[in-house]
Length: 103
Image 1 (tube, rainbow, N blue to C red):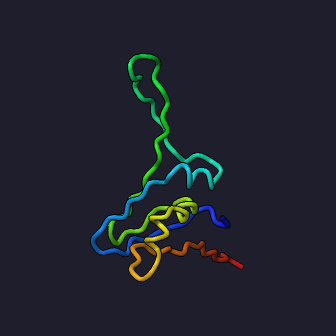
Image 2 (spheres, helix red, strand yellow):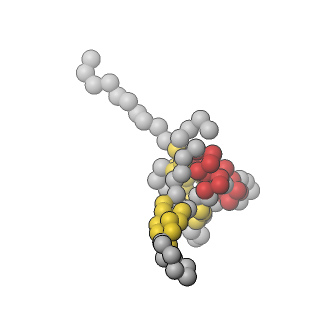
Image 3 (cartoon, rainbow, N blue to C red):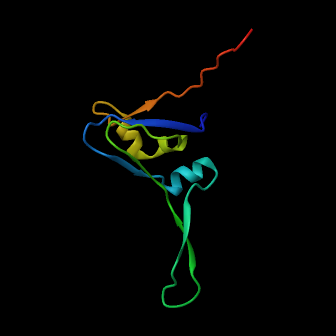
């Protein structure tokens, strides 16, 4: 994708929007793992095992997300939430305004 990040706004008045950043979609498309990790207690003895924990995004009604990986737009639930006729999310344009000081 051409962009690294995206910002989303939940335009629903009542429902929280929550989605998992699926490793198989987001991390693989990005080429780097964004998942957290933790150690699971051993099952039936043996050493503890590392476990990948996929991240989740939660956007409350009327609120705007922080910067998210642009690959979130590949997740089916996000794509559906952006589409008419009843969108739940909108994409927020982000830009940097540069002012020349002095002269």
